[in-house]
Image 1 (cartoon, rainbow, N blue to C red):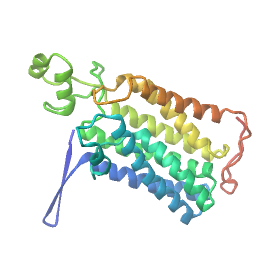
Image 2: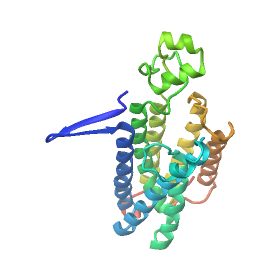
Image 3: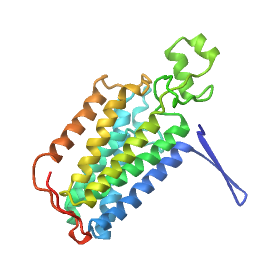
Length: 280
C-alpha cells in the first residue's frame, strides 16, 4: 500500500495521491487504446477523437453524479461534492452509463455507427479499469471482507481497511491485534476487466457483428462484478438499498447476453482486416 507517490525532478518535489495519479493514467490509457482500436475497426481519426473525448467527459460526469447521489453527504455538502476537483466520489457504473450516452449521441452527430464505436471502446474500458484499480489497491479503497485465503492482503495499521475493521467488529480486540487479511477486491476486479478486454478484442478480430465486442465485455465484466459483490466490504456510506448494485450488475449482464445471443447474423466489423464472419 502506497497512498501517495513522491517524485523529485530537477529540484522539484511533487507529492500526489496514488489514486488521483492512476485515475489520470486510466483516462489516458482509455483514450489511447480507444483511438488505436478505432483505427483498427475503420473509424476516421477525427471522428474517433470527438467520440472518445466526449465519452470520457461523459464518463467522469456520470461517475461523479452516481457516486454523490448514492452515498451520504454532510449537510450542505451535496453541491460542493458534485463540482469539487477531487479524485474521490466516482462510481464506475455511473461512468459507463454516462460515457455510453454521450458517446452514442456524438456518434450520431459525427456520422459514426454507434456499435462500431462501442467495439473500439470495449478493450479500452478494460485497460482503463485495470489502471484505475491499481490506484485503488495502492490507496487502500474498495477493499474486501476479511479472509483466511492465502492470497488475502493485510493493510497497514491505521489504514482505511483497518479502521473499518475496528468500527465494524470488536473494536478493542481489533485495535490491539492489528488488521486482518482481506480479499484483494481491486485485484479481482482487474482480472475481470483484463480478461473481458481480451475477450472483446478476440470477437472483434474474428468478425462478429458490430457491437459484439462491447456486449461480450459487459456480459463478462458485469457477471463477475455480481459474483464478487459479496466479497467487497460494506463501508456503510451507501444510500442505495442492499439489492441495488447486484440488480444493476445482473441487469447489465442479462441485457448484454440477450443482445449477443439474439440469433441475428454476425458480420465482419472491418473486412479489410481479414476478419472472418461468424454466426452465433
